[in-house]
Amino acid sequence: MSIITVGIDLAKNVFAVHGVDDNGKAALVKPKVSREHLLPLIAQLPPCVIGMEACSGAHHWARQFRQYGHTVKLIAPKFVTPYRMSGKRGKNDAADAAAICEAVRRPHMRFVPIKEEHQQIILCLHRTRNGFVEERTATYNRLRGLISEFGIVLPQKVANLRRDIILHLEDLPGYVNQCVGDLLAHADALEVRIADYDRIIAKAARDDARSKRLMKLPGIGPHTASAMLASIGGGHDFKNGRQVAAWIGLTPGQYSSGGKARLGRITKAGDRYLRSLLVMGARAVLSGLGTKQDRFSRWARSLQERRGYWKAVVAIAAKNARLAWAVLKFGEEFRLSPRAA
Image (cartoon, rainbow, N blue to C red; front, side, top):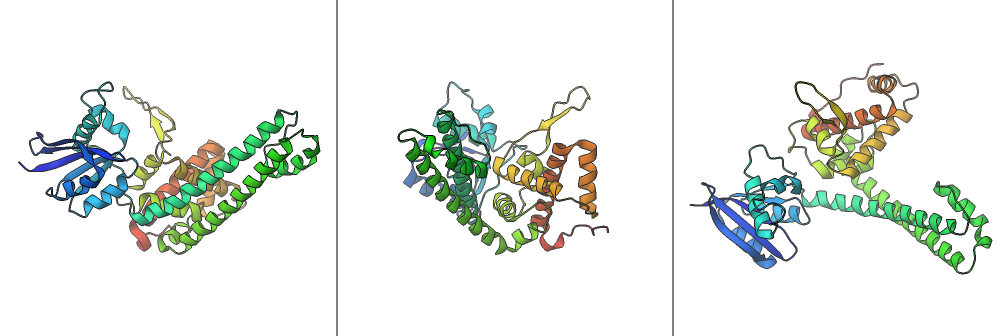
């Protein structure tokens, strides 16, 4: 019997491989495969379906395995756990590989889109910039907390904080003055780094035709366009735009039973960074409505009046996610309906 499905539990140096034949019987069980031997092992197998958890290095290995004719599918780790026969107490690499092999064979399993190398390059830019932003926020919070220990409470807004700290430098005892100066210098260096990455991301978005088409949508700028393109690619892994909005976590969670439909808050599943970009873009749309009378602006204004500010923000963000999928899926063939005067 030939192997038709393989589950691989990924790791840094030692991997576990579990393969089954067309009857579901284990035909390849290797609980310990070194990193240098994994690719030769997969290369000698006939074309089959390979399942892996969507974790560190999964997209790299998926691209490698596809070169040998294999069909690779990535699964979110939370969807693999129910198929582990030994439960939580019997967790080990071999059991995880067997669970992945079982999960990938389920007909209604949901999979993670495999990212190409150029997509991961753009996402690397976004992740690095976002890390600098978080570090900058932590630096200002650390500064504010240290100063409060000496009875000086500073405002949260960065511009006001930097203005007011100058007025209190002489009131700081001992080496605290040096600490404040070093923290401010570190924050300045982070500002320069963030500005550099902003320029790189904006340039990458302007140089890509698909990103430029995305930026024509209201509330989508260079950052959102490049992050969306790098995250979902051409959108071929989704059947429709609603699946994209649900994948990002912009759809309400259901608590329905007995014929009664109950919709709660949005699920906030998926990529938090991409969701935050869409939400910030939606807020920019509402703040810039003014007296605009085009179709989209009238819809957004009416929605805000009927449902409130935050529900309108989420609805606009979800709509932009669906429109972005359509733009990427159909390319130049997709056209928004003409705007009414």
